[in-house]
Length: 398
Ligand code: MLT
Image (tube, rainbow, N blue to C red):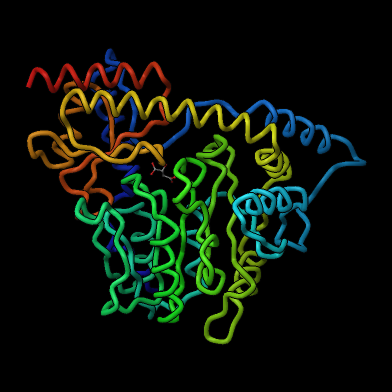
């Protein structure tokens, strides 16, 4: 037998697994120290009360023979109408009309971003921003695809734009961006949509952080741009919006108008999902179905506001220290320059050892991330303040 040798091209471990392992090793060696994690974007606010109540009702449904549910409805790949309708409602408020069969419920954006590649030939060329969420690169390396990078730098505001000379079949965009926090305006996205339509390319648009967008001119969905329904698939998640990192639920939009090679990508995705996936639990779907209700949106806005205040605490600490950073306004991530020209992993080690604070080295997101560092605003308020005090004291000591 032969293994998939493309796996041998991957880095030894996934970025957040490496960060986690180093943190655990440090904690085991220093059990007396309180280590604060501002690394992986894992939420700390509990679920909104309306979500908890919906889940409790769903648990009761499951315990009565009259209301018990087995597999989800197969009409929409195991997604319940009530959840799909609420997602359509959230899109309608952004000016986007969807039909129910364009909405696919999943266990989160990460899985779908990897699984969607089943639809595309391994011969395709992929264009991936650098730096960016490492899942895009790793999943394409696993499939042996040719990868081109679009440089995201301070000069272009970490928002690369299409270049006519570059021919790619699959294009990843992440906005608001993980890790830099930069977000595309609708005008900028229009250039990407036109480029994809001209070049017969497909955009895989990761909108996991769209609920953090505050500025009106920024896009909340790629479908706010005309023509995107002919070239883009959008991935969204309840993880950061509604605290579902441990619950697991997301949704992917594959428009009816999106066709390539004479085939409907929506039909291909439905075929893929009904073959390899059995849906998200009823209890989870019922919890998610109230997130975009009026009360749900009010409650999740409170949690998002809490994280925004953390971002402001980190930003003002960096301002006082005179350290360059971006992000934190339309995104939960602060992207800072490592002080004194340090390399990303060297700063990671110093921060862990001297301040007992964990962040994510920018170089883990791509070569252009070298010399940068990502802090997340998803911690508790107390931890964020304490981490900032420690970072300040460490850097003032020099
Ligand atoms: C991150 O820290 O970049 C995210 O939490 C990772 C993820 O959403 O999978």
